[in-house]
Image (cartoon, rainbow, N blue to C red; front, side, top):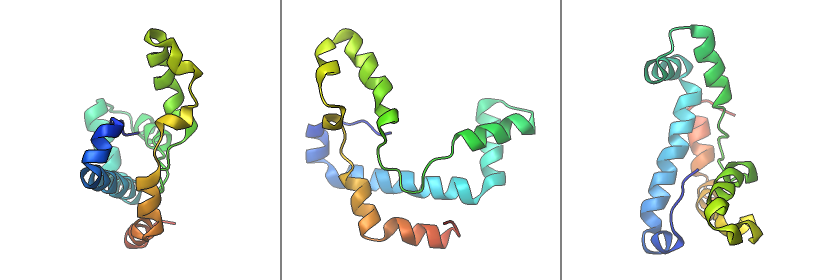
Length: 120
């Protein structure tokens, strides 16, 4: 999940779009290069047990088309709601903009990556 203010997104849409493109390609690389990904997970999480690294790899099963899912933003809303209770009364969809992922999906960017990385 990427969090930016709406005003930032409005002023820097192309920058955020490029960032999302990099995240999407990173997800593809992660899935297509399991051994490398396991090495990175092991290194930065300081895991020496392959089975534990494999479990973490499975847990970080990001979708190839990472549209914002409600479960991703419920916890942050709850956290903000502790200090700003009025946030809890808002429609959570108000805080989500899936237009960038949708654009990458509709223009074929994600499908192209999936083919290049041999993923379905």
